[in-house]
Length: 97
Image 1: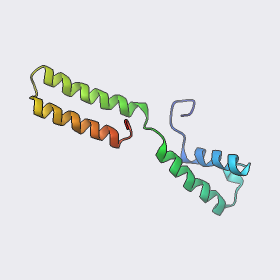
Image 2 (image 1 turned 135 degrees about the vertical axis):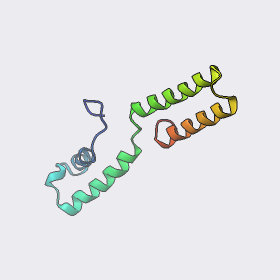
Image 3 (image 1 turned 180 degrees about the vertical axis):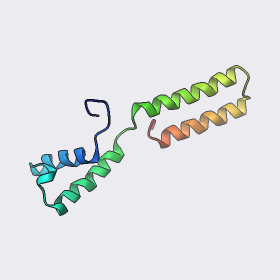
């Protein structure tokens, strides 16, 4: 995360890789060499955890289903199916492992 709490950009990751492995900024590398760092940056970016907002939304969705079930607006089967759907979506979006 950067100072604003946002995940780094692909360019920022690639630049960090270039500086770490080649000792110079991405912009100073030949295009074909910079492309390798950009490809590696995609792999790093894909491995980053989802932003906290995704996990918070998943929990809010599950909490809403729970509240509907405990108040009698949903029966048990429908509530459990909805919670399962939200858990699967949270895992697919990287909010949980």
